[in-house]
Image (cartoon, rainbow, N blue to C red; front, side):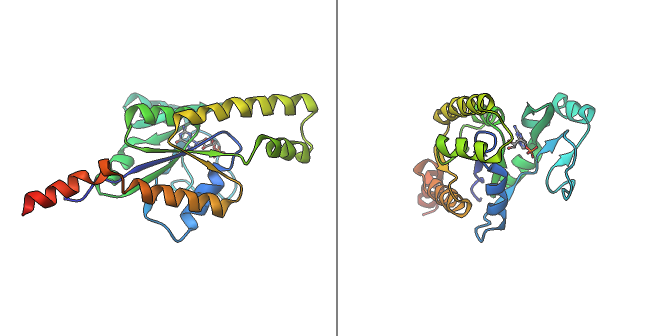
Length: 204
Ligand code: 5GP
């Protein structure tokens, strides 16, 4: 029998670049995992494909899925539902493959409660000064709004204590490299390999 796959949860504050890092991971040479396509009720953006970027569904369809127990986790974000279909995750893990989720922090905490064996990675902005710099550079917010956003970012950073790893997203390829290192190391954890060794001894 093969080992069950590992669930990898990539999360972090909004605007930190989770989507970009996830896409870079999918495009990288290291593709030893399956990406779990999320379900959402938000509108499709130009270039997005149903079933690839998201499963785009109506609010009614999404709520039925929740009622039927079909979601591993879900959250409302800026007026829309986002969630992870449970069936694909379980089937893929059972097939011995790792699964990557890219989700916001509330959803990540639900996964933590349900699947504590998963690996929780928190993506962080390089520093708050940099965040401030970016917001000012964008020129779309006034001083008061920028102050509020930086305060919110500081609060969001505290969420980090609920995770196993903090990965700084200073440069996307570097962030991807760090995440790959985490995945490889996690696979070597004694708690993950112990059964394999004991079954080897039992075979003798
Ligand atoms: P966007 O609309 O920009 O694609 O995503 C908005 C936010 O929803 C991002 O922070 C993204 O990580 C998060 N998100 C995407 N899929 C899921 C999901 O399945 N569950 C949860 N909880 N958040 C998700």
